[in-house]
Image (cartoon, rainbow, N blue to C red; front, side):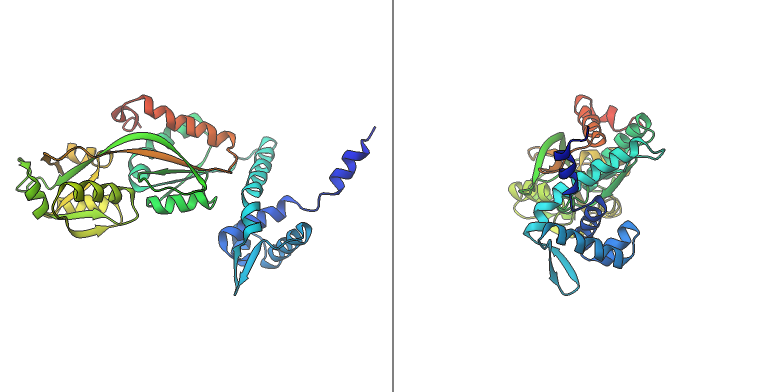
Length: 314
């Protein structure tokens, strides 16, 4: 016997997953043209789907500013629910198709993305051969923006920055170290605060978690900090330090191999240690799928092992 009440409920549904997919792509791209490119549809089809969705809901989801479409209050309210529905549909589809599930989207700040996650991801894919991880490496501010905008599933950050829509989970401990070229005059000495204050520094750019803690540490303990270079990557900082008489300040995770190889030296100083907590960030309203939950558990297990074992075992 058919339950007529359930039948009527299904008949009342006026939107579909394709419309939600177009809505999500438009929210990320800022236009139906960009949305069409993201999901391989024509612009007219994308525009029609978006119009049909707004008509079905009886509201507008975007503010039209020139050719740009910017999420309004209604669109922001729909975004996490639409994201969850589309992701659940992808998981259901993957159950019955000989295809891989949707890739896990991860954003990480430079130190984590370049020095910690590669081995973790490699081990993860060995354990889950059908799983794919798309890793975006950028500074902490950009990671937070990506997670807040549902552009990625998980973020890994170094700084203390946060966002009202995000949940921050402490992850690994880290320590900052001061670096110099092997031939630097301070290489085999314990550098004084005066010598450090008189030095030229090579630092990461503003917006990075490394720069944030470096500024806090050095400015608190030195009379002045003369910044000669501001660079957008950790590798660039290491190369400039190795080729000059300037000093650098980076995460111990990022410099261990370079120090062991003799390309850089860690300076001894009388400054107090500078430590920080690396963190995982998630959107408050995002539904975590099975792959995301399992990958988080995989990364969290790293806390139970020393960094030398976990991150150099690949």
